Structure formats: structure tokens, C-alpha cells
Length: 411
Image (cartoon, rainbow, N blue to C red; front, side, top):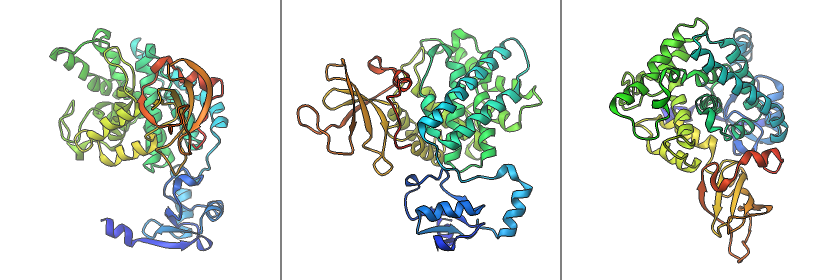
């Protein structure tokens, strides 16, 4: 299969590009360009101009390419399925739009739970509206929404967890190359995937110790309860019901509630499962302290092919990055800093904002670029010693964002 795919790839000079060609590779890393999608069909002259500005040549997939008249017909028949080539928007500029969008989505996630508690019907159209805004923000620059998803309020875990899973799933689906209309669908799936937990008693949902066999059975019932709640609403799609019912299934057939094997688990459920598990591992709960992003990714990787799909996990790791902006790191000399971005060509040596000295006391903030020669006060090169979870050393990253100090410069 891989050999067949390679046989379909044709090297094309940028000057010879035409509408309808499907570009699968550039003569430089995708991260060095402003293109959001790693692989797309050329749909208009502007796409060609953008490619010619940054590339001398590209590789085109002959099988996925279409003639101009076929492409025009496809555009007319399915305008919602188009996957436009969108240039990235500056992080700070996008944050101005993303913050109110995030707040509106958070309020909607809280309303969802309240409505279910009161026995009211879900306002699915309102959910779709806020998710549409989230998708548009992620298409412009995913860094802003992903940054906001790192800010957590433990008092509203269930509602915020669903929103974070929605945001992570949208960004992951984009990374996987899904078209824009499916990003909106999976965003709604993420927002509603855990709605059945409203039927689980709080004393079980937030129990600090291990659950008994009976309590575990009640906890696991949230998948079936979610399916039941969503099926009663005519505005909810079958995909959303499938995800609520199947996001705890495992590839090896050891998941619940039905013990489905890999071939029978819906693709959207596989995507939601990765985002859901990552956020749960990465968040503080009554019964466990949230792990760092790096440790959370390691746990996902260890569960590849037993719990999770390998391609989806690989794409998720690529999307989040080993050192994502907002992560708290302890340097080798004991100083503490916040990661503010990685250059595209050196994902292992980020720029960091130093906020605590070696004695873990507040100090004058300064930016350290680990990718360049940077020495600590003793003359030794700065290196990352350990990655810590959110809230470590009493550091709240949103305080720095609101002051305008933390800027993911490379995203």
C-alpha cells in the first residue's frame, strides 16, 4: 500500500501547478510555512500563488488530483466540504477573538449540564453555534484555543473537561486532515461525549479513593446513559450518539460498554478517546494530581494499539508537541520557567520565560532561548531538567497571559 502511494506521487515545479492538483509534500517542512493543512487540493489561483511564494517545487498525488471541470463541479455540489488553505493569524491577534469564543463555549457547556439536571431538552443548535466559532478560531491559529484549554478551574471539571476535549478533538481532527465541516461535527461530539455523567452520583464521580466493583459499574454506565439522553433529542446526529456510547471502547476489545474491537469502533470515537484520556490524565482531580503534558503523552504512547489508534496518537503528539506553550519546566540549575514556544526546526529546545530563581522565589522575568547558547549564572548551559503539571510552584499561567508576557512566538 505504501509503495502504491509513492508511485502516485509526482514532483511538480511550482510554476507548473494548476487548480485540481492535490499537494501532499513541499520542498520544505510544512511548519516553515503558513499552511494549516498538511496536504490539500488546489482550488483557486490564490492557493497557487501562496505555494509559489514559498516553494520551488512540490509533490502531487496523481490519484487524488482532479481535472479543473471536475473540481468546479465538486465545489458546487459540496461547498461545505471544502478544505480551504488558510494562512495563520498572529497568536495575540487571534487571542482577542478566541478568548470571548472560549468563554461563550464554557458558558454553553455549563448550561448543557444544568439543562440535563433539570430534565430539559438540550439546545443542540446553541452548541453547534459556539463550536462553529471554536472551529473558525482553530483554523485561523490553533495555538490560541489550545492555550486557553490549558487554563483549568477544578470547581467546574466536568463542564470544562467536555469543552477541552472538544477543542483538542477539533485541533486533532485538523491535524489528521479532516475537512472543515467534519471539524464542527467532532467538536459537537466532544462537547457532548460525557453528558451521561450527569446521571452518576457526585459521591462516585468525585470519590477520592478507589471505586468498588459496584461503584465502577455505575461510573461506566455513563456511556449508556449518554446514549439514552442523546437519542431522545432529534437534533443530535448519529455520530454524536456513537461517540457518547463508544469513547471508552478499546482497540483490543477490553473497553466498555460493549467490548468492541478496533474495526467496530467509530473513527470519531477513536479521536475523542485520545483527547478525553489526555485531558483526564493532565488535569487535577479529587483522587489524583494531574500529570505533565510530557508524562501524559508518554502514557498515551504506551497504550497505542491496545487502547488507542497509533496514527491518531502520533498526530496528537505532533499537534501538542513535547514542550507545548504554557508548560512549566524546572531547569537544571533549579530555576523555574514557562515555555513560550518552540522554533519549527528545533522542537526540543524551546524559548522559556524564567519566573522563579533557583530558590523557587519570584525573580525578574527574562526570556531564555534554549536553542541558542545560553548559560546560567554559574556558566553552565541551560537545559530542561523536569516538566511539571499546571499549577506547579504556585504558577498560574493565565496570570502571565493576561499581562501579555507569555507569547507562543512560533505558533
